[in-house]
Length: 372
Image 1 (cartoon, rainbow, N blue to C red):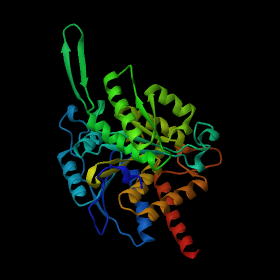
Image 2 (image 1 turned 45 degrees about the horizontal axis):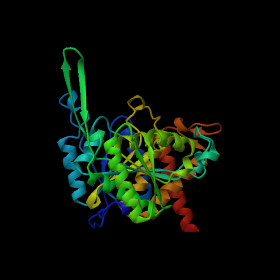
Image 3 (image 1 turned 30 degrees about the vertical axis):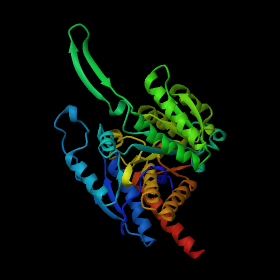
Image 4 (image 1 turned 90 degrees about the vertical axis):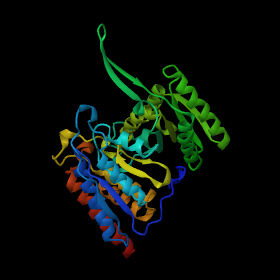
């Protein structure tokens, strides 16, 4: 289990798993609906039952400065779910919501698995041979750096409008995200790559360098430091050389999106955000895509894969998670695709139909396993 690498991440015992659902905005309700249809199918063929609670509708923001911020009602909802030992499944949201959620509940660690599915090897823009051995995890800090800094605007008579932004990293912040990366590396191939930018942010890079080299040496893990621009280049040119990639906040955001190229589409990218005491929120790696809202064209597979990750890592339901993943693979093997994954000979369907196909495949796989 990946979650075991996050310090102190032990959920309170609970007989019935509790799932807090944020339907999200834009395409969020559609892809969340597909994921929950798959969960319905899992429950129908197993002995598990997941209690579900849905977040209250988003409150109107009082002004442009508050656009997309987490509201008091949403924050109280998260607090209640976490207090009861539950986990969150989040549809895509706009604005500051995810950044506020991570800061307010100390969800300091984001894990982004990047392992291409063999069924989609020809859907990706890169040559299949280049992706054959790609299997990496980006370990991204969530609560420091530029995304969690302080910003302001002012007007100067000569220069006009001036935007200001200050940010920092503490040694404690870097140590705890690096510790997750090191532990994860020890359970995998025993090596990490750490992203810095020596010339651009010298003091922060020096802190990350010192902490990374010290913790890696203490744990017997090989450590390679890369400037972020070179890391982006090598991810595309030599993607199979990476295993665990530890990054600051902004760099991890950009590199994870770049890594979605390996998967064939941003619609296949998913992630988890972890904090102490079992707090966890699972999400896709794409945005709310307002232009696709209510068109039944969005790819729900990343949301379904984030559900599978939640079942495995937060609820300890490894068998059910594997069932979802295998069912999804079967659907892709049968040639079903959404528009973003279209390739010659495929059969393109909409959001709801793709979710229904995966749900149906869950039932069929479960029945075949029983008969076997």
